[in-house]
Length: 241
Image: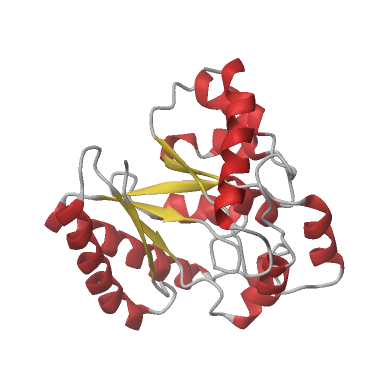
């Protein structure tokens, strides 16, 4: 079983970097204390959902809502600092999770982040659902191909296109879209998972994938949701094994 732990840091704010490094190191030490082979990842992310403007416009981010050139340098420097500190002390690798309602949401923001960070220190968690919502496109294979050199870890997550469309049309914020089920069970949204599996096979991907399912109160039973996701993957997997 691969272990991973999620560490949010408000990387835009240089004053948050020191505390972010301390939190990441504490988490990495705990991971290494219980880790078995294969080695776990430290999953770094922005402090998603904490900036009102980004939270209000999640799923429909425009360039003027993004970071300035100076802010990008600060953001990337913070990510590099965290990843290098974690690797130096614990040997763990760090992957960054692009995410709606954070400063790395759209394909261009992902590309900019990767351009500015150390490819030896920082990989990418490619999240199929967040990519579909943040890009406004169901063609997640396009994103996987674009960022293939930095994809160390993948989240299987789906995006419900009708809910996403309403969220954009009615200007829902991220948390309202989440409560309305924008990230649905696998096979019930717009992500073409058979195409994703074909891409993984063609690229000889040997990393890990994680099925990530948001189940909020009133949305059903997590155990049954997990079983349906597993059954869906089993139904499509034999053709690509």
